[in-house]
Image 1 (cartoon, helix red, strand yellow):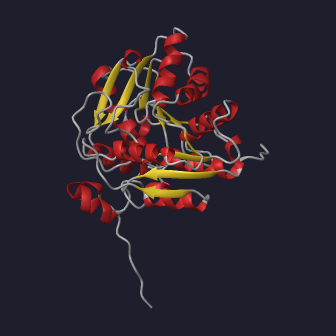
Image 2 (cartoon, one colour; image 1 turned 90 degrees about the vertical axis):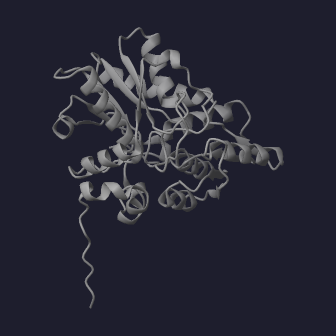
Image 3 (tube, rainbow, N blue to C red; image 1 turned 90 degrees about the horizontal axis):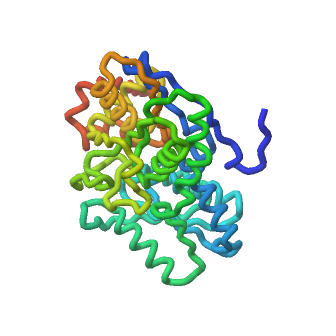
Length: 329
């Protein structure tokens, strides 16, 4: 039984779900949500903060500031609380209300930027706000997850070796693309260790990370409206773009079998399933997908009938959501 003194010390790194019986595809899902931050972002948050402390950029009087759609913000909130540091998360209206509540419960300040950028998203506007905040003085320290090499190093040193140990015969790895920290860390690891693994990036339709046309995106997590500085396509063998309607279908298919995952995980699983059907029809490759998060923080969005009716009403008939009976006294 582990005994810990800091919340970031606990993380389940060896849990995989065999999705063959759910998808009828050979796919193992590495679950990264079983820690106190609830997502894979705890690894990057810890690595970036520890590096900033070593370099002297982050001191006891500093105020951490970061742009986040939710998961990294929660991870930074958790570590900042543990270290007695202030943290300001700059997010946008797509951030799940539950994620905002978690950050505030951990003592973080959450600021919502509602001005859209030139691509119809919020990322450039969030980053501009962060830059202005840092320029104003006040001891603000921006970790910059979009360009911080410690973001991908966390996965080069942790996530990828863990997968390699569990699956020495791995053939295909599917990784969702947000900041691309997880993607770049895993891709660099397998390339530099000369492992013959096909790296498939999974992105959202409407994201510009891999040169896509910017479109409306409602599910926070994967995808960007500004290409991240970390991304290096030379390490990626293929890219799958997943429509958000398929993300919604997939999370509900998983939840109907008892697996409540988040939107990012739904996107990755949907893309992986489609890619395997196209590239390995009827075959049985050793394939792993990384599940970045769990589903509890999406209860107000992708699992909520009113939200679905507003944004994806055409899907309601096929999702067959159970009704809630309200009993009055």
